[in-house]
Image (cartoon, rainbow, N blue to C red; front, side):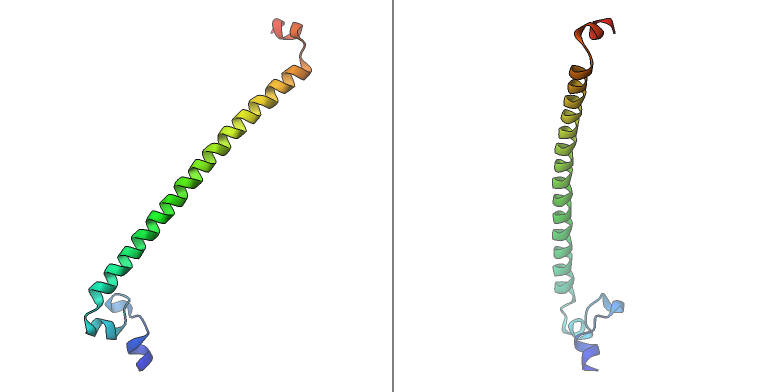
Amino acid sequence: MDHHNNVRLNSAIGRITPKDMLGGCRKEIHAERDRKLEAARRHRLGQLFQQSLLAGDLLRMMIIRQQFVYQFWIDCHCSPIQIRRT
């Protein structure tokens, strides 16, 4: 019974222990939980923003590389006369 009253979180009373509910700690526990959830959301958004910046850098590098490879292929396979004809 001690485990049920002091350790186990009860979903019917907001995922807190019955002891905390009777002790009047419910508002403080929920406020702290909300603060932690908001901090986690901000952290995730920051991570997603950093990943999007890295993805943008990667995309720019791929475009530059593709342009270089295309120009290299033209330089190797086309003579100046062939380029003028097309």
